[in-house]
Structure formats: structure tokens, C-alpha cells
Amino acid sequence: MANALHVSGIVLPEGGHREFWVVDGRISSTPIPDAQRIDGGWVLPGLVDAHCHIGLDANGGVSVEEQEAQAVTERDAGVLLARDCGVPVDTHWMDDRPDLPRIVRAGRHVARTKRYLRNYGVEVEPDELVETVAEQAEHGDGWVKIVGDWIDRDAGDLGPCWPADVLHEAVDRAHRLGARVTTHVFGESALPDLLAAGVDCIEHGTGLSAEELAAMAEAGTALVPTLINIAEFPQIAQQAESKFPAYAAHIRGLHARVDEMVRTAWELGVPLYAGTDAGGVLPHGLVAREVMALHRAGLPAREALGAACWRARSWLGHPANLDDGAPADFVVLETDPFEELESLVHPAAVVLRGAAYRP
Ligand SMILES: [Zn+2]
Image (tube, helix red, strand yellow):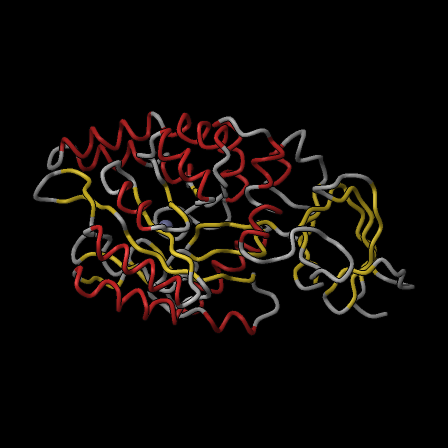
């Protein structure tokens, strides 16, 4: 049959050798004659970048051509499902393109006036937060993104962006509309109100205390630490040093303890996911580096990989295993990623909706 695939390899996360076939974009255990063979290696469900921005660069929204190039870069790195954490352009056109990754969007960043990167978000004052969140819930795919803290230039340091009562109301409103709420937060001071408001996920979360992590584990609140992005903090501190010395010292301190925070989160049972934050400062296609960074921070290899694969897929409502009937979205590796996560850097083949790509 034309375009059918016959895949043989050790299928993760279960392990053990399996053969399966791919037809009409789905996995099947029924043999198909004359199918094109793909020999793993190791075969795992499509990778997930749980925090990236397809359609964004350091200056804001990008052209359709560049949006496409970013999406192709992610696909070739094995990212077949991305959670987009805020872009100023509408990338829903990609949903009609079978060669581009599946994207779960969070609309545009909702930020306080002049308290975020220029050209990224919808910037509003507290009295407009609830309505803006409701609007962005309409534009997203089940997520809304609120910028919870940013540098307060008058104070010269990180500070919360929103009063507790409007946050609470905004999160309730999003939940009633069926959207989950995630929030950007670097420092300590915004966290108590955000967690009390019932947000579903914390992005970065460098200021999280062990007590707050324990509460997150209890509530099932997710954490996407974006370690390879936090690795940029010393450089940001250097640039900010002369104008905002307290801020510079603060983020240096947050950077110094981020691995310990992630290890504690892991030990306490906080649901952790791998996100690169590509699209702002970092380029796309770096999910393997984030998985390795999670491992260096203390997650066992299997868990670091699960944070970018089966566990992240379930979290975003997509099948976690390559079972019969599941969408044929998978990555083929030459060596065992549980033994050596570097195996993820150059996939031997990427199959998306049943079509094979050789990056
Ligand atoms: Zn981001």
C-alpha cells in the first residue's frame, strides 16, 4: 500500500521490541504488505516542547514564512506537539498543514502595562484583566497566559503585576470558559497570590520555595522550569547591572538555586514538563537540551524524557503511547535515550501524522 510504513524497534516508554504498521496516519498492529520499512533503534511518541513561542522572535511577531520555518525546525527536532505560551500573531493556519507540529495555544501574553517585553503581549491595567483573559481564552486552544511578575522599574526589582483579588477572578473566569491558566513568574513575591488564585501551571518558577512546591504537588499544579532559558540569567543580569543592581543580584541568586528548586519539585512530586521558551531569546529546536538540563538538575533520565514526551502528551490531552489506533506521531532514535539522552539531539527519523521525515 502506498505510503504505509512498517516500523520495528524498541517502543518506549514500555520498552520491549515491537513491530507495527502505519496507515492513514494511525498506528496499526495489522501487517500491511510492501510497506516502507523503518528500523529502530528506539521508537518513542512525538516529543513535546511544553513552553515555546512559534511565531515570535526577540522583536515580536514574525512573518508567515518565519512562522513556518520555526515550526519545521521544531518538527525536525522531534517536537510533534508544542504548547505555545503566547504569540502576537495567529498561527491557527498551521492546523491545516499536516507537515507541521500540532500546537496547543495560549493566545497572547496578558501583561501589565509596560511590565513585559515590548510587542509581545496585550498590555492592560488590573481593572481590565478579567475581560482580557476571557478574550484570550477565545483565541487560544484551552490555555491562557498571564505575566505574573516582571521588573518594577521604580522599585528596581522584580515585583508582582496584579492584585490578588483580580487574579482570583481572572483565573475563575478562565476556568469557567474551559481554559487552563499558566503564568510567567521569576521572583518570590508574586507566587503566593498566583498559587492562591488557583493557576494550573507556573512557567520558570525560579522563586518557588519548598513549601510552595509541596502545595503545588498537592494541588497538581504543573511547573515548566525552562532551564535552558534560565541559563541566560547571568547575561541578563550583566546587562541590567548598572541601572538595576538589586534586580541583577536577585536574578543571579535565582539562577544559582534553580537546579536545587527543580530537584526539590521532582522529589515532592510536582508535575514537571520540558519547555525551552524558544522564540524569545533562544532559537527553536532545542528540546533535547532542555531534557538534558532536567536530567542534570536531578531527574532520572526516564523522568526527564517523560517530561518532554509521554507525560507531557497526556497533560495536553494527547495519546501518551503508540497503541493501536493512536496517531502515528513518533520519533526514531539510533541509541537508547534512557542510557544516553544525547540520542535525542539527532533523531534518525520523525514521523508526523504518518508521514516520515529524515531531519
Ligand atoms: Zn516564554
